[in-house]
Length: 560
Ligand SMILES: Cc1ncc(COP(=O)(O)O)c(C=O)c1O
Image 1: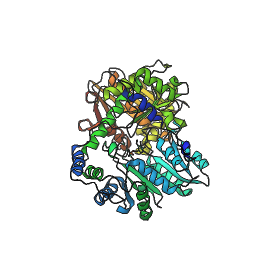
Image 2: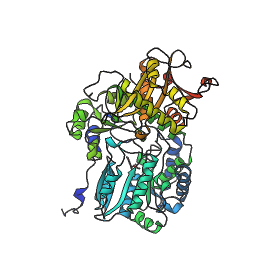
Image 3: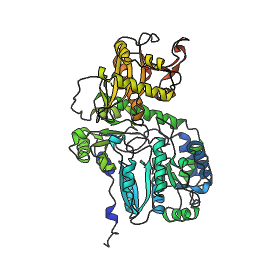
Image 4: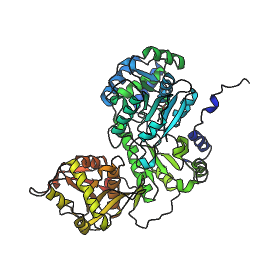
């Protein structure tokens, strides 16, 4: 047999496929390893596809995709992504994967360097190797809240660097880069004159804030954006995605498409058209399902003292099992599969930074998911406090008296940022010793540095904190986050902690009274499922407030 090309051996194999194939050979495996949506495809999409086959829509189509589909995508991009383009900038591809490959092969030649996230989707490095480009990992570290470190990024740039890949919402992290990080990445790319390849295939699953498309922040035509129908509409096998390019590339795009695939299969494109133009309720229902699964799985992980990164997008959970893996999570994942019959993706499949972590796909039935999480080994517990919770390197515990001043300082600062209050008023409501006397003051603490990141006051067991509370309620107050710890989701961690504590103590409803203008906090409560309670305004003359309530019975029981 003749020899294969010299670079082909450098293409790294997929570390997920191995687990997947091992799992297929076994019986009764709980499959939490692959990013396959578990929801049904909307019937009108299936009908459109099958009608197209029956009508013999099987001829070659245009390289860029069916005009009607491209036009529908142009409208969708303007409406949902804030990205205004013409049809010649939208290229229908064979899944997001071919869009990635297409953009990389247009922008990168042999030896050119591309910055890829670590942990990151394994196809990025595989594609680079396929075209003899060099992938250079930029670490997303736990102690930097899994965000890029710009000093480090700058050090990684060489004269050969041509492109940076951004993937938000992220596979495998389930994390979303805040808009200011995306803006800073665009600025970084501008400074070093790099292409940006923005993989947004999980755009439909953004739980904390609306999805932000990198191209909407781009001022000088350096962004290629990758989208896909695979995850959004549970159409992974239909193989329809699209690449959005800067303007002026249509001639070369047409040639590249012709060389690679000519065009995407027509029945799949006709089904995609119905998906994009049709009612999006099933997408919202799928997002709610993933969100509920994430909530339930994270509650169980917290209860078991297993660290994880608070997910804010996609349908993955990034879980630290480093205490059990002895530095070889890939080997551990295989043993876990063979012994416990649960397939999870080893973090090392996503880069060196993933050692010690696993990715759990929550696009599964809730019972399977929770059973899979239950079979994970538990870390040794060092804390005795039943309420202590840990995630993203943050623990929640009762405040000590010597921390009251620092808590008051942070509360004042947080409140000043959201709305300005007079000092008298501040002294009154930020009086932490008073809070500690009438209730319990909890702090979120950075495990690595011991620094206080935020605080919340809750009622003592069986009591109410304020006269506005009613029997059976858990009326917490004054959730404040140190503005310096923005981006670490301290507010979400403390809110979830309060919900868990309320449930643990048998409350029927969690109620939060907050200042009328605390809009940041209101958004946080609403995203956690709280709704506005119109019957709980403070009487005139007393501090103005706005109440939010969450019925605990409405939320899925998470720890059974
Ligand atoms: C980050 C990311 N990008 C792209 C893809 C490609 O998906 P598809 O080719 O099915 O659109 C995936 C699939 O898992 C993914 O996780």
